[in-house]
Image (cartoon, rainbow, N blue to C red; front, top):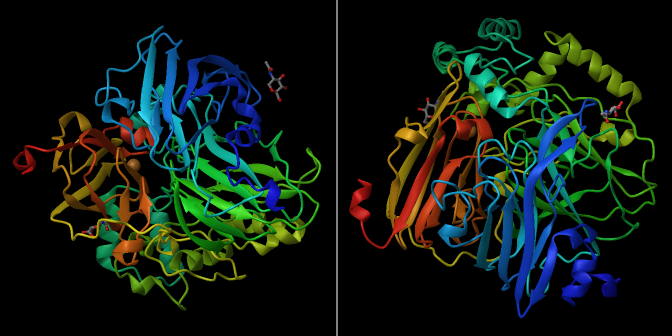
Length: 568
Ligand SMILES: *[C@@H]1O[C@H](CO)[C@@H](O)[C@H](O)[C@H]1NC(C)=O
Ligand SMILES: CC(=O)N[C@H]1CO[C@H](CO)[C@@H](O)[C@@H]1O
Ligand SMILES: [Cu+2]
């Protein structure tokens, strides 16, 4: 067993373990690893009707790029489109001019031209890359990027698979965005009105306070606004459920699964009925192992888990969209193509005011998270469809499937719950950095970022401004900074600061706060992060929901050794 573990015995063994990289791999000479990528258009058929997509080296996802910590990187990216393009290395610590954001890092890659990225690798873990131009990420320009540590991996494994999830629409994303702007609930198929919700709440005896009703009204949103774009086909490693992705394993192996959410707008709840998953890495950073039955992956996050399936059979990897509009299914082990029973959708959850942080205890009866409770209520009364589906599930799903209860809730500031059925769901509070943080200074600069929006007009803002109108945020080099996100909307926003990791204030002592590149800020919540502004340059700072970013939810952070006074 030990002999087969990928302890980084040699880079040759490492690269042999990932066959798909042959295509992009050029050479590694004297500690420099070189890749050649090209962005072009391809034909696809994800939905049963042919459509056009954009791809890296002719494939979706693009080729897996693999590096070893400490290597120098040279990546030539050729743009074969007739519009500007770019590649951003998501989660990588790079010089600002190599970060790949047009208008901030560089001018972009013009049609027919090649841009060569050069930077040293100074980290390890699971990351990814994607276009930062227009809607190209939604159209297929993304791929995994894996960096092996120089020393033994803190979470050793016998075999690994990278699982990159994404969401696909045949509709041109520019049309999707135009539709969102003209009628924001166009894509919200399960639309309910505020009135419906209040009727439902009163039928259920939920005692909504007057100010709570006002809050719903002020947000101009309905309780089912879980996601604003729906109708997606979900992909796992570029494959649909008709021909699910297959990962080979042998019973008893320690298998590392590197999950990447490359979706433009979709969050997924991930479970593997059978073996318990142990989370060992979040956003590329090693964490103290956390055993879970399920975890939610926000847009652009990555999580590595270890599973040790004991039986020689087919296991299902189930990634269920947060809005319950569909799944992406994969197969782990067994005979490839073994017939699978598809899971039944779990009930859609209402957003409750409890999800919005703050003390709304009057909705919480019986000590259960309110959302779960509302789910049960919904199954009984006002969601006959869901009830039917659930009875169907009870009748036909495999015992494994039944083991996973319908639990949906936000992933922060909620105590870890052993949900009905004993399922354990990962929360941000469970994340503990394996390597201690070295800067323990108290922040000397405090920023509040208000996440705002108007769903009726589909405008999304940071501190009330659209990107085009926003003043950059100026930080002193070396400064300790706290950002408090205040979410005044009913949507999740996966906030992404380029260039630096931030430490989540998740209840851990400062030394062991987890470092992340994405911070999911739940509907109506407040969440603080701390970081050291130790990467000089101009950095993009935005919500990673593609249509939110494209609608203005973006800003620029400037870290410099001078000019701290400009920030006021
Ligand atoms: C697209 O896929 C569907 C279903 O798999 C198939 O019936 C159809 O022929 C395909 N179309 C093309 C043009 O390949
Ligand atoms: C809609 C809503 O509840 N928004 C809240 C967001 O968070 C801030 C600060 O906690 C509250 O003041 C808002 O009311
Ligand atoms: Cu957003």
